[in-house]
Length: 330
Image (cartoon, rainbow, N blue to C red; front, side):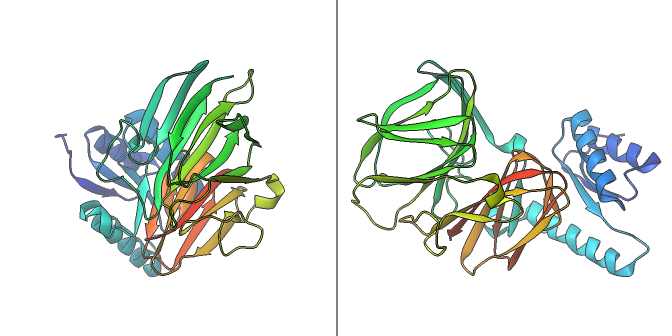
């Protein structure tokens, strides 16, 4: 079989037998393969297995019963939508799946240890013209610090910082060593305003610490630096989008930016729907567990979905999943 880089091929019945073998061969030859099956659970297992075998992230799964004319039409519309996204400009896409392999990986030495990170937008020495920001969202970093490690004091100004603890114990400290401690699922909002120095610390010397840090562009400048945080129990965010940061949801931490942040622990077999306002976009991150489906497209752990110009977002959990969802005005 000739090399097929750049080709897009739909293989029906590709979760079994000759269809599966054909799809695997095409993927090995460099084609973008659109897998088709009737059983979603089986299809997801085949998809993950093929990605593991081939090392390719150009594999996509579609579920349809081809004996149903309605499902055939739906499948055709989904494939046409994918083709348009594949060949369109990024700014025209309504839903973009960012696969884990496509997100920049960083690592290095810091005080008392090391860090590793997944940086979703241009940051420090990493620059990607396609991913500089998304509305008011300027930085979205998923970082892990080794036990006892410290990101030393460093200055910032004119940003709104949201920190979400994904594992372990996060400690924030300013120039006076003051700040707060976050445990898994807890959140902190810092208004940097006219300027401050701060450090991020793994408060445990026996375990790694993982945190998601988001920077938002402020709507007001020269503000007095301040910080606030919220404790969250897993029951509060189970099978619902819990508002963590919002100017329109009572009980959430407020922010000087056109942005909102939600967390969710979505249990296997459950789903939820979110309305998307006009002129707003959503950035959804699967930080643990999964996979999930976002508007019928598969999203695996450490992957993200960038969504705009859609009325609703449907999220279905195939396995237990930890999610962060960010709304921003575009």
